[in-house]
Picture 1 (spheres, rainbow, N blue to C red):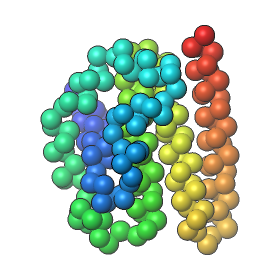
Picture 2 (cartoon, rainbow, N blue to C red; picture 1 turned 180 degrees about the vertical axis):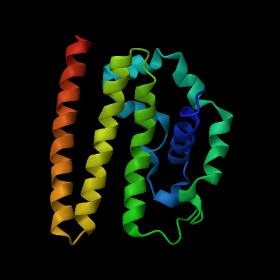
Picture 3 (tube, rainbow, N blue to C red; picture 1 turned 135 degrees about the vertical axis):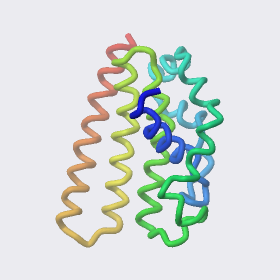
Picture 4 (tube, helix red, strand yellow; picture 1 turned 90 degrees about the vertical axis):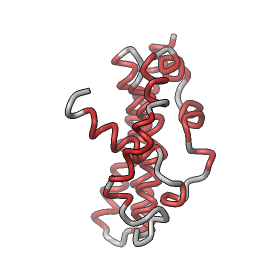
Length: 166
């Protein structure tokens, strides 16, 4: 593992296995099964064919790494976190399993495309959470632009994946 890989894995582990009480996430969006079901068929197949996917899911060190993460210091219940922070963390946590799984595809181009779909969806979800909570017109405009740009990006990615699936 490189020096850059471990911090990425640690953050991913924290977001993958953060206590449900922290994010108040429903059980239907948690876990690898939900992550896989939301991915396009070409991404699911690429991930299933990847030897790295199973290794990442079963790494015991990943489960213990989140204990030292700064976002966990508010306690397992997320005490002291604002509603907005919980909404942003929920958006990130929801997108990390499919993002990580998409990146595990053996084909680097498919891996990039499959990982970027949930990345863009996370940006849309966070922007919507911001729209619901902000009073700033500047932040509203940035959030609206974020939604528009990322939804356009997701359409382009899906079109490219559809071409490659044929």
